[in-house]
Image 1 (cartoon, rainbow, N blue to C red):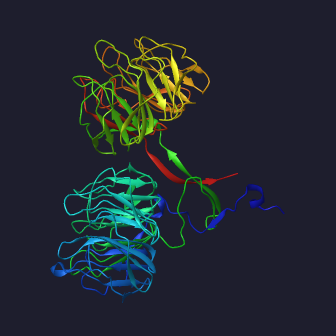
Image 2: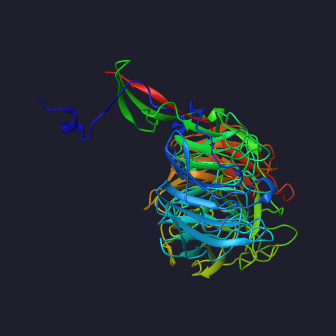
Image 3: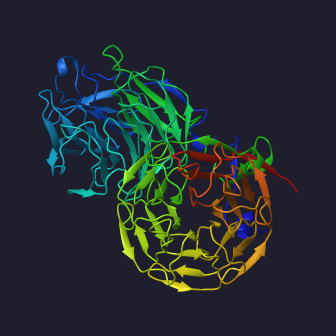
Length: 606
């Protein structure tokens, strides 16, 4: 008899209960573990697993430095060989208690350390130092591949990041936001850093090369701990003596079961489903250990697309992301821009946006980066301009092109500039300079369409140069556009005003259903099959928003502030979007669009 594996190519798991939702942490609980032995159990570093953990160093009563090391076996702590250099406010790295690192820190005399010590299961050995001495940093990884970021070098805070290759430390790309008293989880190739002083809610992920701002935590705090990876983690505790725990599922943070004892300056180790909190809090509670378990050691994590057989219920199941109706979507206020402007370029996503150039009281070069809550001024574009074209699905790699350099004289430019996450570089120009054009795609594969005066021109960017390709059917300016590549996109509106929409398939343009409200100067986000047309101008500024489902437009919730000539995100899909700036006159307002989504089990039937 042919089995299912032979037909389908994989085995279907048999489970006694449905997998845990929300990254496996929802429904998890904290339980008491064995107490630490030492008396100086604040500001210690931790590493390892829930049943194989290590804590080291620390600062206790009288601010005395601690050289103690203790190992945990899942039940009790045992004192072992001392550190070579007593210190607190340091960082631990390691997935087991037989191989770990202790990095950086500060002594009782306030000396800031760059020392690194390695643990081999029986003793500590001094190895190569960090490049930048600091304390209150964060880090994670193993004894042979670790990462350390942020901290206080003795005055102020730093964004410096360093990675360890088992022999030495190398300075790599900085955090986007300098801070100390944060926590981080993961490896030298993939990590997440969260919170920190002042306090902040910021979170950033590391991909082995650079940090990217992601969705914020729910509760701003400092002096907390965490455990897990860049896609499945928990953070817990914090100043002042908080018990709050949050889970990260790779996309967003969710508050889950609290610690039994609120504490700051605790240590964290383990995974996102089996975590450990040790020490911290007040002197009276600093010996306490708590163990986090996500529902049960045998449980699995619910993932999109997972197929399994529930042997108790007797059903075949599939898990899926269920996206709410567009009519359920809502707009919420985001952080204001630093510089009011209209006719600006935009790129990135709701959690990591980019705004550049535009018109304030004059044509400007200002660039700002958005982290999901606040805008930060970064390096300017080289050529001041407004009504500029833009492309880029992330805020670390974007493209700006064309525009008006000297209003109201309508001086068109063909200039193209490339953003690498740090600075703008002039690259090859458009073939035809124009004003009020729009773009979509990425920094290496983009489309520039339309422009003044009522141009039908379209150019394709291949990462190096522009090439003229098939024109749009109706020449126009001040259009809206959406798309995440140069082979599929949609343009809409524009002109005087107009409601026409056209889709691009990589070869030609096809006229599709018109907008319900004809307008010019609207902004777009999403892709050719699921897009948003936001704001715009008729005889007055509009707040109207329409959603595209691949065949027709539907009006959804209005913007809070009517405006046109705004900037917008360029991420895929129409379930999230970012809309910022615009005329009314030029404003700083930012609005965020969200359609509710849930992860559910669905029973498969014949």
